[in-house]
Amino acid sequence: MNAGMALRSVRLVCGLVLMAFVAGHLCNLILGLHSLAAMEAARPWLMGPWRSGPGMILLAGAALVHIALGLYAIAARRSLAMTRTDVVQLLLGLATPPLLLNHAVVMHMAGEVSPGFDSTFGQMLAVYWSFSPHYAFQQVCVVVVVWMHAAVGLYSWLVLKPVWRRVGGLVLPLLFAIPILALLGFAEAGREVLERLQSDAAWQRHIIDNLNKVVAVTKPLEAMQARILVGYGALVLAAFGVLGWRMLRDRLARVEVAYDEGLRARGRPGLSVLELSRLNDVPHASVCSGRGRCGTCRVRVVAGADRLSPATDAERATLQRAGAGGDERLGCQARVLGSGVEVARVLPPYADASAARAPAEWAEDAA
Image (cartoon, rainbow, N blue to C red; front, side, top):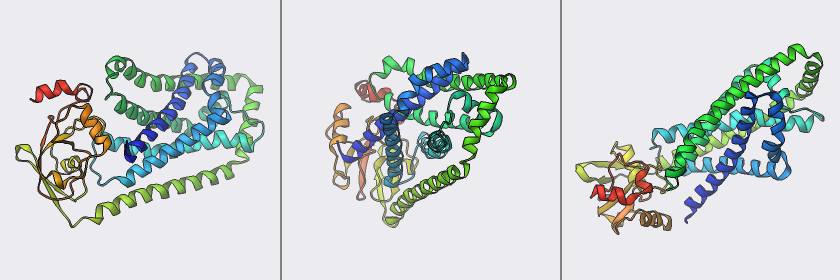
């Protein structure tokens, strides 16, 4: 496994840890469809482990590593040639940290700087639905953005696995049902909280007393959030700055790739065959979006093999798994270093995830 594949694996593991945390949080919200009491009864089991010392270290570490590797992936790109799904996933990923920041800082730091702060669901839902309704809309945005980013990432990984045929029928409905039910639980529990605020004066005073503890430290919390956002924004700009520099560095040099059916692509040296295809609107299969996992972008090199970057161990493993011939390369991994390369696309542009799970079947059809 080369360094790039290793980093993607680490990023995937961190993403799964974060998705497990979010899934637990959403499942806790789903219980709001029953009652606020049910949410509180399940909270120690669903959220308690994440609030322990090891859980917080694991969660914070996974978040920081996932964000860092995501920014590194942007800086390491050679072009902005991406599918629409990749663009959406990139934007969702960049939006996630700022949206989560307010909730994470308030929940954690309020308990640290305000002894006795009560961070129950009742307290937080009262804030969202009565005292600061705009936070309720923010939480809806958080759920939609974070879950979509996680769901797309999980689907993109699992759909290439042979096990997808057995679990896909269960996973897909869950990916849609969990956030929808969580939002319904959030709304139903909010209705219960509003009714209790009107009917239970003692509980209302308790909620207000706790809220005042947070209000007392609002300025330090806002200052901390501002510093974190500025730092995050600087890192995002730096990542795109590196990408821009890489794109401009070789802007004067040009290479050309000839495809089957008389198609041609031109671009900067160092771009992969797949990137050149995308930049020149050459239809080219790529289920895993150029991550070297699926093998659907592979090409047969007709001429100019010495003008392509050498195959890595990870690429050879994917080619072997796909049953590729000795003259085949992954279009997403074979970078064009010199002009005069001629290739033929092995699979049709419409090849889907089944071509990664059962490459032999598609090979027979192509033949």
